[in-house]
Length: 178
Ligand code: HEM
Image 1: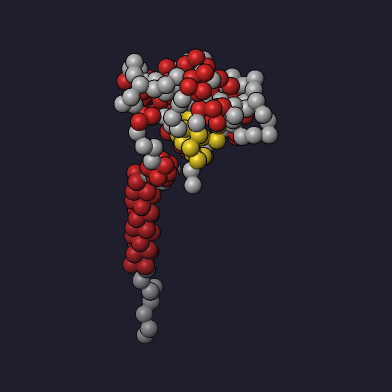
Image 2: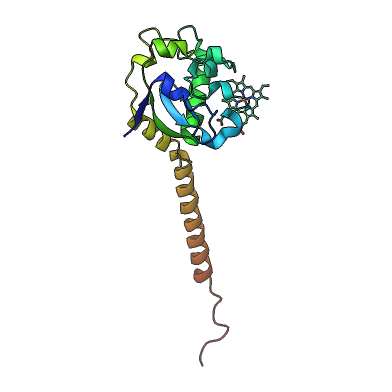
């Protein structure tokens, strides 16, 4: 069962405690990024993201704790595309451990900004949909499979033609029985 993290709970996984995993949240989905502690852990280049919802920072490409929130209202199409590219990367690289829940007064005090209504925080995060998206990113794309099948068929055909060619053109017996 996926866990729902409040912003305060998420902050407990900001990498400051080396015995705990490191989590980041993107569009309300919490990823375990412990495998990249060198990026997100204490002293790492992206420690500002650890334990926080960092959709905005990823979209606008700023490594800044002040930009770590879910506010995408003023983001351009290009920035939203950048965010989707990050999500695609995280979906293939990290495990989803839950979703980030609503903020509150304590969350705001901890530095999380409330999201205006009508954006991702109001949407239901569908973990099954995310798992399906992860499966869709399998290296065996339909194009690759089609190419493999065509190459296989052509190889079989070439082998068959070679076989016919060799068996059909046997040299005639040099002499016949008298
Ligand atoms: C001079 C600018 C920058 C350089 C040279 C740089 C370089 C790198 C390098 C080499 C990696 C490791 C890639 C890998 O091994 O997969 C990385 C990862 C990363 N970069 Fe940057 N980066 C820069 C700026 C930024 C900025 C402005 C952001 C803001 C969003 C950012 C966000 C990230 C994130 C989130 C990762 C980790 C991705 C993961 O978890 O795999 N980077 N960066």
